[in-house]
Length: 551
Image 1 (tube, rainbow, N blue to C red):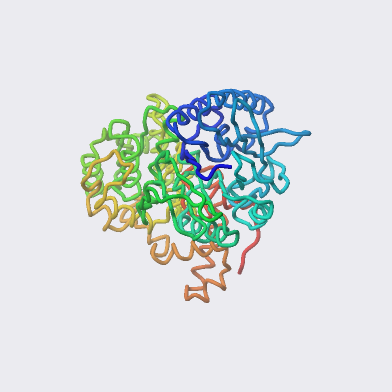
Image 2: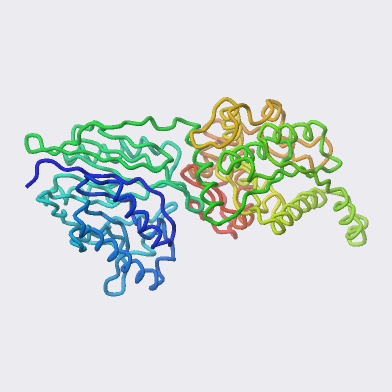
């Protein structure tokens, strides 16, 4: 039995369904981990996480087995053993597993027991729960390997402790959420370590996968709750951790301890990484977006430049007769500060064509929201035409406050392929804009100075679809609206409960109604970065046809 162990933690990105590429990357990282006894990869590293129904294809499972065998054979060289996340089929059901590869063979497999089936997760749709896992014997040491959700409850770790586990190693696929760092380290890992009296190595993936963003932030916690290693967030990282046995207890020697991003830097980097990986992995040459002179499009453009570089971002101003001089000047200045391509395409010819085309059908009726929405849809058609012709993905610029209450035009400003502001309330948009004007994100490729004029942040928001229009003509002020929406969406509170907090009862009832009747729009909205605990699409799944109201 050894009294010293070197474990490499591989905080890596993944290619969803790119099994050969994932295996190649793992072998490359294994070479970099020379001198380690064992290298540990994140959950389902061979497949990609979350695989959704892709994992139900038998061909994928067959290919996973083939690649796992290839990885196993590579360990015959005497280098580090590998702890690999993959899938395994048995008697017609699938399991989410980790496999120990050493000496040229698969020597142990352990199945995930606790399958998350809430929020963004639907693993019970895909996998069967495994039995309570036994520790894995590795070089005379009993390693407990709880997989991700297995450490959020005490059952698996308690069983591993009872079965003689000496070190806990937890491969994870844990997506970013605001304030999740504290929950992972203190509420989850700290609780399990305190209960079991065992050290824990927590290995998380990094990178974007559609709407989810994985922030890494892997760590090692000793049995005394001290943090021996804290890996960076948002970036790939490989660290070799050294373990020694002191008085019968395994201890990880102190190493690097990186500071994790505070708020709102973490939110901004989540947007940057989510957009970067979405655009690059879907092979778009860049993005195109409408730049209106308002704060939402300005922040979206800034995130795009930080994610992709200015040369891959194309901004287009599409003025109408309602577009003010301030908006034109502010849009142009945003483009100048960011260093992006900037073009102007007036939409008045399109408006005139639609007015003429519909004149007979609309005769005798007053102009109303219909004509406002036509303007937005002309802009959507224009931007999609540019996207089709030149290949750039259309970046949508709407925020969560607007999407919540339907203050967005379906097939108009909602058109596009991705949205970085989809889960950001308007007040968060203001906070992020102020922060970015004063800071450079760690992942950013954009300029070091301000990215938008101060006036973009300070002026009243407006859609500019009619004369002297302001958002507050139709909605409560955002400092009132956003807390109401947070209560209705994230907390699932009733009208009466929010009224008890001091909000106007009739206002809350109106916002609840708007929230429910806009569900059909949100079903047709593009994907976007998940930031909070109840994003639209993956977390909050409401019926479109819905007669329930809390008042």
